[in-house]
Image: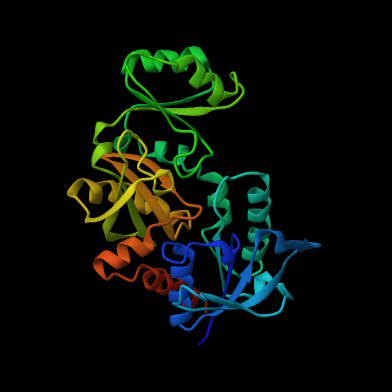
Length: 318
């Protein structure tokens, strides 16, 4: 049986062919026999209570000079698609939120949405990790500057970051001397108007911020360690980090065991865990990346694993 798959993503013409995970997933879907349809967030709408989209048929190619071909736009009832991938990058702003409501309508009307729209809303990528305190470093979420200062005074070496950033944006390392602590907290909290996170600094960041991918509760046995460039504390590739693929450690696998059952329960089929040293720091549910780098290093086909999980779910629906 041939299934249909819609993807909601940022403009496909502007992606990085060599690194983009969404493209890798779409190539795997096409290879698995899915008929592809392309939507940008602005293409989604509700007609009464019906989830709709102005979609275009999509073909993808393993060619850096020409990696996609789009058909003409046509109106599509989203619930009639077998599955949909939500692959829009953060920030998780109101427009992202509204898209999840439309996709939730599509889900009610019959489409399998990956990841589940309600869980995209419920599982803030910073705060969701705190549901597994046995895996996390000492941390605080607050907008109270006195409380945040006290956390720094206790742990002395602290990372402060916004709750809605990506790619290392807005991440500050506040060292034991407390230099610029007041300015950092004023900026991140907007003088006490916004909640932020503080985490005890993990010195193992020098060995890399590991991205571990979990597909339908099963872990990919390799990760991508994103190693900061000299003078940086952020390993994110978008912040200049260097990627190095590695096998998982025993501790990495233990962390996944703690988290994976909850991911399955919440309909989170494709998730990226961020682990520094022995600690879980974030759970990425919106648009996890690093597939291409791991596939290239170890010959895996992570996209095919996800498509197999989606196909299995669709077959169970009958």
